[in-house]
Length: 289
Ligand SMILES: C[S@@+](CC[C@H](N)C(=O)[O-])C[C@H]1O[C@@H](n2cnc3c(N)ncnc32)[C@H](O)[C@@H]1O
Image 1 (cartoon, rainbow, N blue to C red):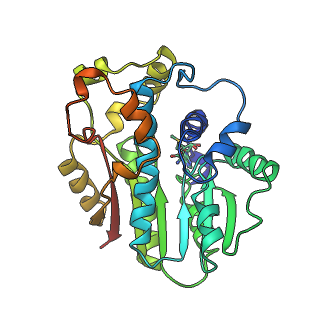
Image 2: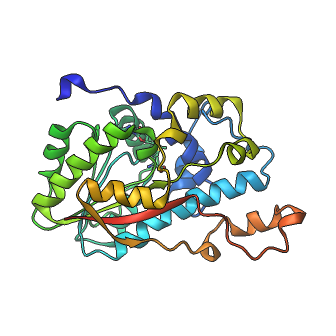
């Protein structure tokens, strides 16, 4: 299995862009981590001119982060495996609050090495009362996945992720589902994924301000194609892979730290609208059946 693994490292620069955006939110540790990040980022974000489009995007990622936490709170799982976590530190935050948590925080080796350096530089984790481990894991390597799962003690496991499925083609998504299904069948628990994104029409995509570097990155990784056709199609896909949806996160935009920025940059024509932002993604808690 390990011999045939595709190289996913071209996806990793996106983690840095996400951290730089999350640095403008109250997501735990994001501001400190982002302040240490150096060099260019792949989405060509314009941090000098933070307009409505900038803030709505940051709010999307803020909301996505909290949507995973919201569903995690609905489980009684103390063993948590986060795959493709990027520079997110949900694990350290939970371990600072709950002594019973065992959090395995994983991503590809290079990201984990950079994250380890940032954590050390900021002296983070010294207040952890739970058990926090940062480990390299290619989620597509089912042998390595099983080995990581075996580090947990007894009890069900919550596997969580955000920002991975849109980088996987259909076969790769099926393969990951099979790995996760096997793990949950053995251990019990849930899969919380924030990656239920549905395709946008070509007109909508064309109307969104996107830098050339971002357009190239999205095209290179076939992001639109890798999204689901619809929420119904996503539910059917997960059902075919042996999962049922237990719960969907309900975003609460009024609690987002980015909301005041979004309101202050709202274009005139949108000011009268009381509508929440259009739904482009859902976060689901799945159970293996
Ligand atoms: C868009 S970033 C999301 C990072 C983080 N979850 C967040 O939301 O801020 C995508 C992440 O997926 C990771 N990744 C891509 N392919 C992977 C794989 N096969 N196994 C584990 N991580 C992977 C990348 O290294 C990168 O950190």
